[in-house]
Length: 273
Image 1 (tube, rainbow, N blue to C red):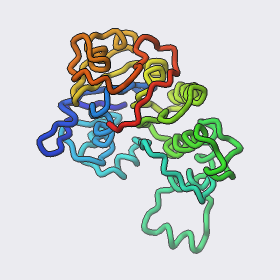
Image 2 (cartoon, rainbow, N blue to C red):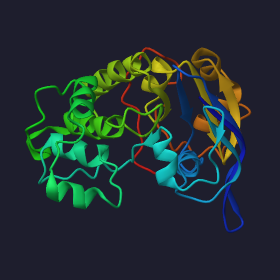
Image 3 (cartoon, rainbow, N blue to C red):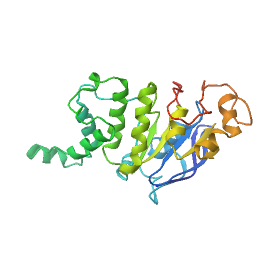
Image 4 (cartoon, rainbow, N blue to C red):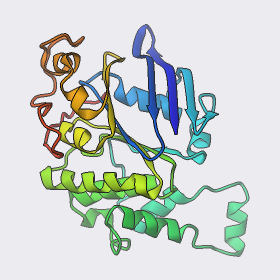
């Protein structure tokens, strides 16, 4: 589904992402983890066209690295952001409808003559996918933190993408809410959506992903099945400042949960990548 080769993102003289290669097979969930400042969000920004990059990005075999963000989205790649940014004065259904609509220059004229309800089926499908069926008429302000995160996920899914890039979807969730999120993520490949998951919650990533890649200072230091990555000395060093990792040993992620892949540990950090 996604083939990334030698992707590089530079901010002046700093290589935030340094020749990273990564694949996401169709129907899989791939995790991307790393300490704060490792380059994870910069990687997603490059994939979606929000920041300039060098290297090759192919979606379903098609080269998309030269396309602007909206054209990449139309080819089936979507993303979430660390900040939810919901429209609190719109209903949940309307929040999703905004994301589902892809207006053209003639849309305003057509709507003036014959208003249409747009993407009702897609909206209901996305609400059901995140467990919010029946909540569409409520406002986001009426929901607690966990369901608000689900609204943000549904907003990404409403276009029925081929690939969803999820940037810290578990940030701020408690253990029960993270467990619910994990269940929803595991179901996405069955709905036709492959996933690239970036999160600081090690239990979540190791519990739901088929493969995991680890970034440290913009470089991939390990990649493979969760159990293999969890035991890799370079990964332990990057997170804990021991072993052979390339990290500085600052321990920015307290309690990494590298010893368990049981699913939903509360490990998170408020920093950006």
